[in-house]
Length: 299
Image 1 (cartoon, helix red, strand yellow):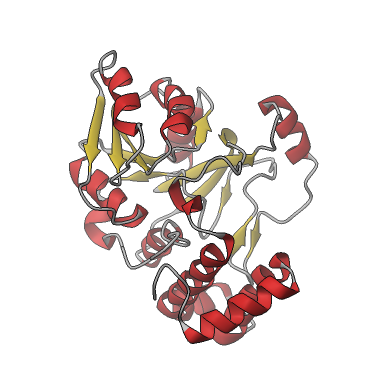
Image 2 (cartoon, one colour):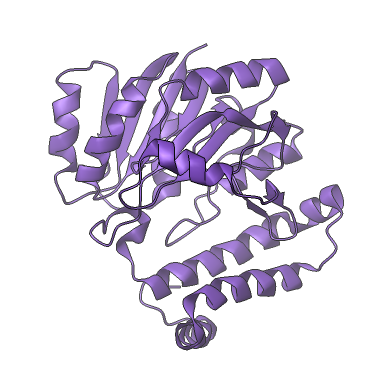
């Protein structure tokens, strides 16, 4: 079976230059599809340096910025592999990431699989990041919050309701479930949405602790991608997209996982957690503007 890797990107030329080599090292890869969501930086120039050396890279530049969901749809429609592996322009894969995922998929008869994602700190090596994350004691899935802690180490492959954004999926699943591009702004929950839709159709999702990828530190100098917007706008879209996600999938999730709380309780709990991390003054501002629907970035 052959893999199509899809990497959506926007204004992250220098970051993509650092991460793209890790995708070129993957096994079972038929093609790497880079969907440039109308970048205005040097992304095209950087990608050309790689396309001049590698013949399995397909570069697609969209004329108008449409967001990550639409970029992924473009990549899916152009893909020719039996499997799709989603990458991100600020994530590096271990050399055996794709190999471990394919083995996990075959071993568990799974349809969607993903490994650990290690969120690195500034000036931290991959080895030190692994050691730090190995000490994290959190549940893999916090079902009442619908959040995953995918940096934690588990002993075995684990069946889960959803995984993170860098997952391997059977290509034909998208012919059944489609891909919802109604997640605006920062696109929060856009990768969880198709996974839950797949779950509704009986497909199996597995977390593989033996496969590892690394999320680069979110530096202030990196203004591209979803972090191009200011923090208030980012949190606004996070809360709004989470509400849309819950309205769409709550009945199914409540029945399957015996959720104890109402949909609106889960919305409020999620929003409260996000605003608590912002601090009181910023939280008050986002709550007021959320109600008014007047944040820059649109409603």
